Length: 190
Image 1 (spheres, helix red, strand yellow):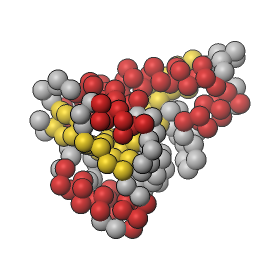
Image 2: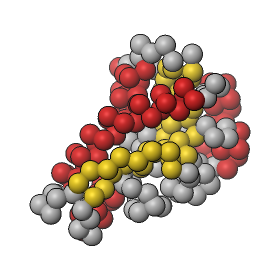
Image 3: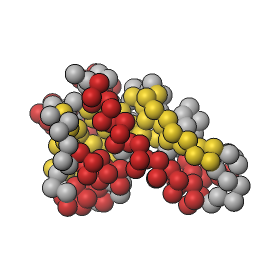
Image 4: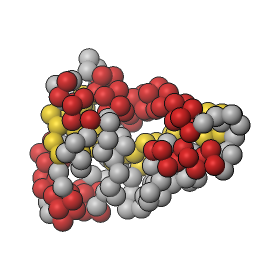
């Protein structure tokens, strides 16, 4: 059975979707949720779904080996960033080569980089009158949103779409594709 650890910073809808998707799977299971936000709703979602969840601070994450030790003890086959807002430290990435992925609410390389997440991305899409947007699932490297692209899915942006309309379309794409892509990655890692 493959082991998934999820990092999230906010509400955790993608984390909940992944946990539910793999709940009765013969392939993988979500063994832990980690968050940098002690008030994140993802903690409540994980508790409700009976998955271990911990919060940590910046020192534990990037200035000490605390989070690294937790990850080593968990021995994940895949680390999934699902709305996690901090840049992953090199020393953790080096311990888990090709095992850390992220989902981004735009078609990278457009609308990526530091500060480009969630509502900020959707606002930029609408402000720039884009006709198309989507999601990108990519490997994580030492730069924000610059790892190799694994998967993209697109949706149309209508001239009448509000920021909320775009957010809703992106959410639908995430819910549909993210678990399937994670499952495919785990199936390819023998």
